[in-house]
Image 1 (tube, helix red, strand yellow):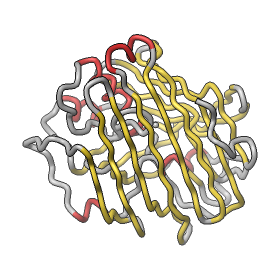
Image 2: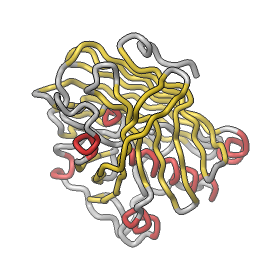
Image 3: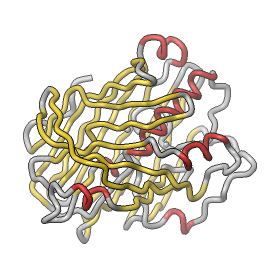
Image 4: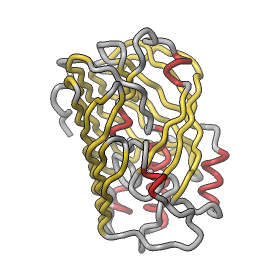
Length: 298
């Protein structure tokens, strides 16, 4: 859900957090990789109010790491999304990681135009907030507290890298063009530019297939897209984690339609990381204009 939109880092791989334990750093990398796959957006046509909410299980190599909740609503030409996640069990005892995020914006000229994004994350050692102000698809202001350490070897971020982008949480709203509802190849075939406050990367999608799923609140089809990670700026090319993610072909997202049939949201995200397969999958999933009007209970 890069600092995980849901827990720690939205960037994959992102800047190192000082004094973090080995387990915490690896868990953040795993969560960040999964969130990377969730960073998609498509042209959006204004529709009646549509909303969704989900409670997701988060696991690493089959072991539960905790849960995440996401809720969002699109009303006319405005949208807002909220997310929250925390580690549990052994993972919580080691790192105490938790986080939340919120994003909002407008629908302009048939496209998502994010206005504000903020995320707050913490573990047993430290906490950090990231805030981005945007207009017209371009970044106007970024505030990161405390700032990340300046590491040598990073590809410099330029102002050009901050234009025509979308923040990771706004990208959870994934509409399709009229006439393409249920058309898996059309839904998946695209490259998405993402900026998370300190890194800029693309996510390339491709169609894999269509499945049927059943979970509390939803029973029906999902479109499966494979994904590839392509760093643009803010990353360190020499890092093993960076090269691993560039070469990684074991990433996918399952998308389910809202009641309008023209807006897709993630049902499942799976990403292989250097420490194993990370899966974020809904155990409760409510889609439509009424079922998810309010945030799910944590």
